[in-house]
Image 1 (tube, helix red, strand yellow):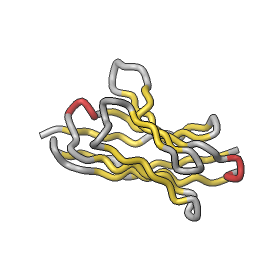
Image 2: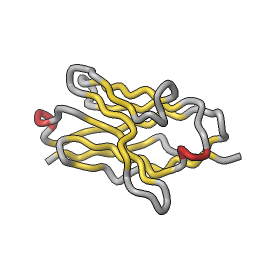
Image 3: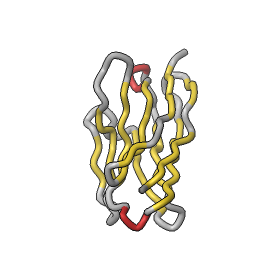
Image 4: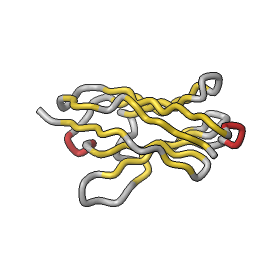
Length: 111
């Protein structure tokens, strides 16, 4: 099994920045691709960004140019740097890997 624990969420003003972290533990040898998803109230969970073990990245169109996904394999940690945040980025952000999910961290963008 893989355990994923997100951190770094919070309240931020429009235009601000946040960095989310996801610490992985357990059977981490099985980890290949990792990703961030988000779910806003009343909406379906959607992919925000993903990264392979080789560093290939993929982003949702809505966050391209504003968010950056990265990973530190030595620390077994996934990151999401979010900039130029908008109110529509408000959601619970979930870390995903190898079929496992974290419990999520809430990001609220509001003035």
